[in-house]
Length: 212
Image 1 (cartoon, rainbow, N blue to C red):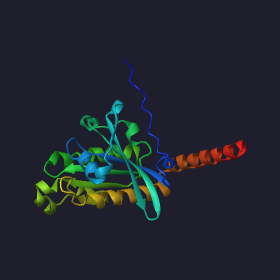
Image 2 (cartoon, one colour):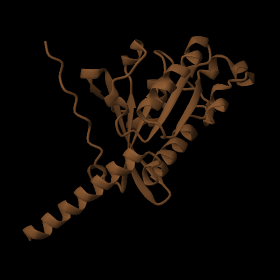
Image 3 (cartoon, one colour):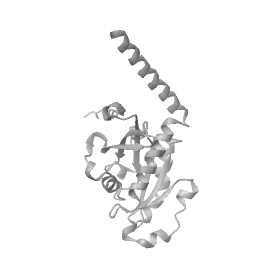
Image 4 (cartoon, one colour):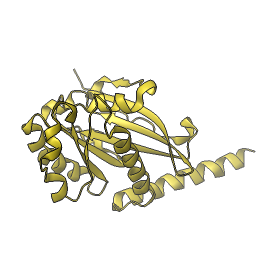
């Protein structure tokens, strides 16, 4: 049976009455707590949209950054990560990445290298942070040295999806970085895509005026 084509969910900010829209992806091994972190941050907003073709869960959120309302799409792997690789569409037009590992499972930390390499193959310049999850189960983990983030000059957070430690701060910081990146992309292809998007918006505006 032929595999379905996957259409990229619309990031139109106007649908959410927002000035901007950003896409943030999560990476990391199975069972490190990616979905739980999303649920902890969103709380009552938690209404995930399942996209079964490529085992994806999409979470929508409206945030305020400065004086701007920002529509945020959080993408979660929802099981696809067990293949140690993501479909290229997962990375398409992402503005930031959250990489998560479980402080109780060394292999999930070691595998950050593989996830980071794949991320940079598709999104060479987007901001990324490293998240050490489940510190509630092992508080001594906060005394250990995790050098991966330092080696790659990435922000690092100790968090707990279970009790909420640092979760809100980590997500808010990531949303802010995603917005800053979208407004000032350092990737050439992003600049081209932004110009095309602006052109389409201008064209739509001209067409509307012509219809009046």
